[in-house]
Length: 369
Image 1 (cartoon, rainbow, N blue to C red):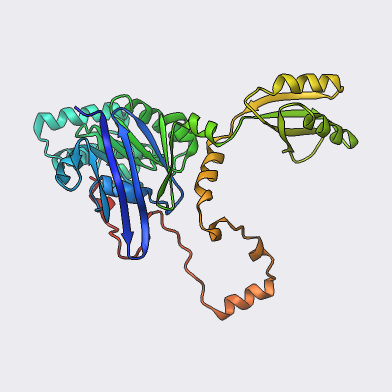
Image 2: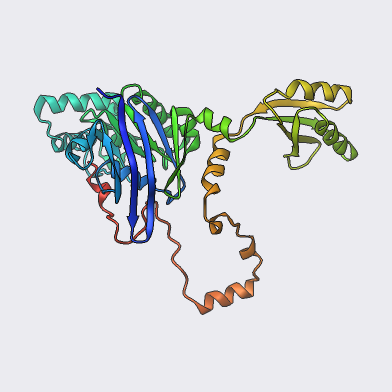
């Protein structure tokens, strides 16, 4: 039996002249917890909908659990538990009624359905709210109910689209712990913008930007690949002594760059980038002692995943996306007023879907149950 849960080959999706996905290929092994990252409009939701057979690719194909999405889409869907970003719940139902409804929709009846409901309630810790109406539940418990409906048929693959969206820190920690536990028993794909979630939960990361796959690594390998570790040195210094600190740090062998990163005050914080892989901390300590500098802090930091994400997703972004709004801010208030009087306001409502064309199917998520 194959050890590959998902095999995507040359997935391309076009909407007229817009290419939402551009020749994307990847594999996901059984038992992996995969973080699927990308900015809005990158192609994440398009990819998820292709894998779950909600839409078909323009070119390419994919296999899920060894089954081709074109040859047997029903078998593919039965192998997947899917939680869309907009959790598909009938809020007027009680939790018990909703899970019974989902079980029957999946074809389970009687004792088999009761056993499956009891199992997912235990897995998602819903016992305390089992008899309550869904509309009376907190956002965190609603997410748990959504995960329970995705698990009720015991799928080998679980796809979660922004499962921590809108949760407070306590709720997010609980759901994150649940996802980690579920990842021990099945393959999990986590489509998210929450980079802290990926660092703590996922064993592998795919990053997509402008419809193209730009990274496929572990979180640690991504940080290592993106840049060399930095040493952060903190000194008590003011006035002319600040220049002395900078010169001493710049003169340390192996230091490629010195940059002050704090906003002022009596404590000055500097980031030092190494030329090679040597640990700069012993050299910084010795240089500070030799030159009688007041060193009060010294630590080594790798580039965090947020920095890596920005580097990878902005590298191929259109120039208009990279520009700041500084030019816009230069315009005077009278000019702004004149513009607003001359033309109707533009609709700036954003869409969380990756595929923006107006004729795209907007009802896909509703069929997730």
